Image (cartoon, rainbow, N blue to C red; front, side, top):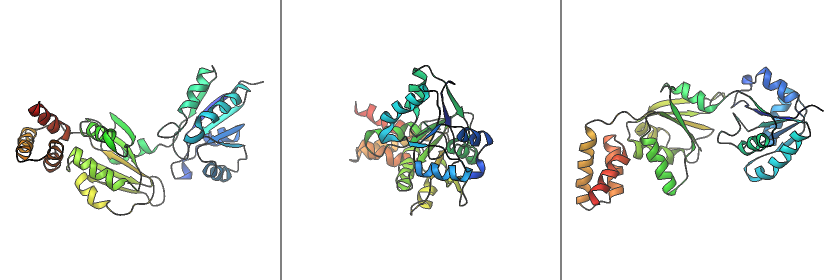
Length: 275
């Protein structure tokens, strides 16, 4: 019996013309394919005229299905793992399966392919020598505030995914945290027929994308530029707002957005004043 293995496969993010010959051959030779959404993967297999067994592996059943997946590899089967689009484990399930197969002493390999992260980064023009990937922003609470502040202070380009329903809120909060003059690229439906790439500043993006949006959205936020002399002016202006009765958090946010400086730096200066 041949040794089983897990093969993690990237699938097209929209354009089926991006299917590689290696992906086609890997799917055709699989004993079973674990998919985030079996309905979507079934369409991909029909397009390729491939008939192999399918099983679901998504966030809700990842733990139990990972056990089944490992057992299949132990039996000597070639198991393929795919997500709805792009590379599994990147803001998608699959990392637990990779760890479990490797912990069992069995081989794991990857068939590389399309990625919304690197596609958006290249299209933005902001440079990719150094960048960070944030996935989806937390929906609310301190976790969201902390993540926005970290993006505001990041000296690398930042790639993030955005739900169409929350895009307007994400852009508005990013503008408040990073300053309205911060560069941003908003990518919608990458590689698909109605692909759209808008590049400008966060202030303009808030207005441009205020309405209803359809399709998958990827954001690239330009790196933070080194703080200039305006930071001290911004801190002084925020101090005046606090002295007039404004809250520290609101004053820092308002001034940062108006003057295009880091909200975190203004906020920390005001906190030190209060200490």
